[in-house]
Image (cartoon, rainbow, N blue to C red; front, side, top):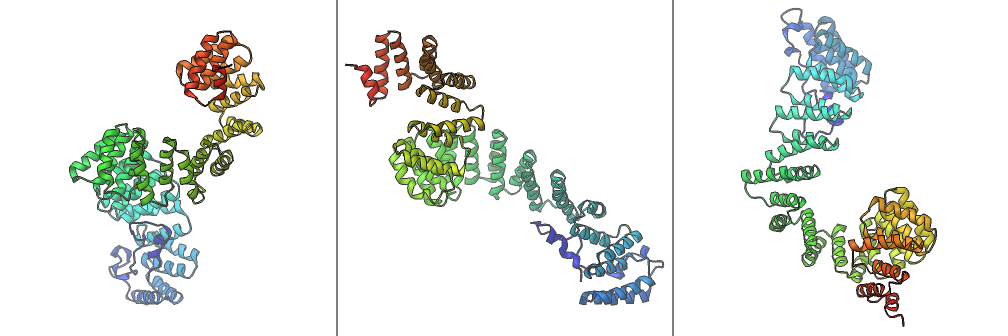
Length: 532
């Protein structure tokens, strides 16, 4: 009974069902090559003791087996198989050092004894002597180049040692020996992904998708990898070739649609995805791509339908609900965002996007307390979210809780000293309070240096110069802002105020009137247009 048959299987989780380095055969004295004997035939008395020892091993009586086998070894001391059998008995008896001694003795007699080397490899693996196990494994591989179990074990050892590239190469070598066993190639691909060897993974999954075109997961992984490397055209050509060789496939066409979408060919992507998605209702990724396409072309009705299908087909996936809320946001239906999302918010309390969009909805409805609550819930999930922090800072600015807004702006700048929005918003908050204008100016300059053509930032620095009574600079910057965006009521009002201060009343009134058309409910603008 051979203990070693289970060792490598219990050490390595190898999906393709490879065996241990040691096979499940008893040590057969009669099969030993003639070169192992001093004479042309085995010693009959030694053979008798050996067979008795084998019988006792099969019965599990290893102590008695050792006695019989040692008798055989004394009669025929140059037979490596006897030493190997003794080594197995000692191993089963827990005498590891004695077991190793007899294995070494066996290999001194016959350095290429495959059973002794297999047993030695198993012991080394159990003892985590991985580097030492490599030498006998390489010898076994050279002796039996067609036995992939040795190559596979080498691959697993190299993976344990952190040598992913060598491990991958061993699996590719094993696949060359057994090209019908795709699991070998798949394992090489999996290890390429684990080690982030994208180029190797692309080649492997491309081959897998060609060898097994019916296995959609191979092509899906390949498509994702090729997209990560932005080699979209290469992926398109590969899928088109697969279709040519294997016929129409809704799945392949959907993957093709994904690639066309990623290179901006939305019409072609839309056609392929719409044709395929009805046959692939279990794959939510295609729904999301279609949703993005519909949003990009501003077809909110179709986007709504996709979001509803996502919710119906995948009720446990938060992204369907979020997609529906995005449609409401684009329709400026903020009340529906709140009524739709509030009941499911607790269910997805660990999802930043759900909490955040609900906060945005409440904020648009001017329900500041609820907006603050859900912004804070979102930030509990992702404490350093720039969007979440900016939204909460602006809210505190609006409700005049400046101590909190200021601390958030400082935090944002500490997180990223190139956050132009944080510099600008902090500067604008200070100038609106008429506080620390030199500090506000420095931050506004920093924002402009980072984004020199941002209309909002140009307005901010212009407004600071106005408050500092530097009217020429104020006019220059605010006019530059309006050249970029002439539809902002606040900026038009700012330029009107600047012109009014230099007695250009007529031009100032024109700007106030234009601003009022954009912001019809602004009482301050109404007073400026009709001061009497």
